[in-house]
Length: 336
Image (cartoon, one colour):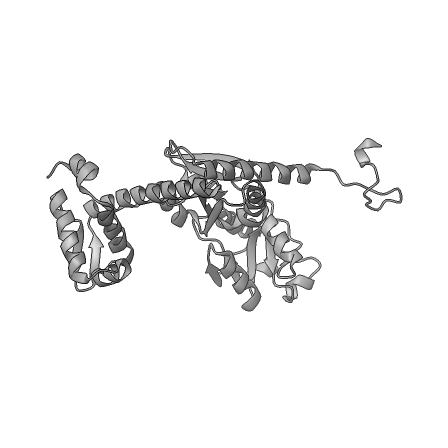
């Protein structure tokens, strides 16, 4: 085996790293060549050159395409990390030149998007309009690998305990309950007292099996001596959830703040069913030991501010007018 340290520090060039990532993305020499705007023979020649540097086979070639070896997967992770740092540095330099603060990449789970991330983005733009925010929606199975190689700066979502790891920093911000939703025209939307037996007979769209909310949902059916629905669609995508709820139509299981946001838009109806379950809090995940850029530091500050405002509004007691109805000028009940 060659001197790996020397290869990583001195021999590998930016074009080599870009090729490795392209091959991993497309798993095909021809498609990687098309993406990089070079010929397929040039891609083959460069890959042989890289493998000769390492003295290792990095990709299996076959008629079906290319597949990274165990060595190749490790080198691809290194390439992704270096390219992410390169892009981050380039964006920061461009931002300084234009008077902005740079670019921040956020991985967002549905539970955190309308009630936390959007207010944070609004505040960030008020503070620094030229800072670019890139948002990638997904679940932890998709977002965590991108966080680890530096392709995203932070994740906002539910802090699932099953994904806790020594290389991750988790900061809890607030608790977020779940609720049950249907389309406004669904028969259960007009039901004054829907129960779990009714829900068990319906088609559902549910979170993925790894999500704690999915596990707790199944437990609620067992608690009521019912078998969980078998007619289900599993997804972590809000767009897919909304589409299945409205078009199939099916029953959905959503974070309460998300459901309320879209209920106000007339897209969903929240059923009057209690869901007494405890779930992990919503918060921020970052990679331990990676210093934040100015843009990501600003986003973190705005996320904390948005969470604090959300909790302050939630804890504010209702205000009642003298006749018993709510009124802006009335004193809080606790003050009487």
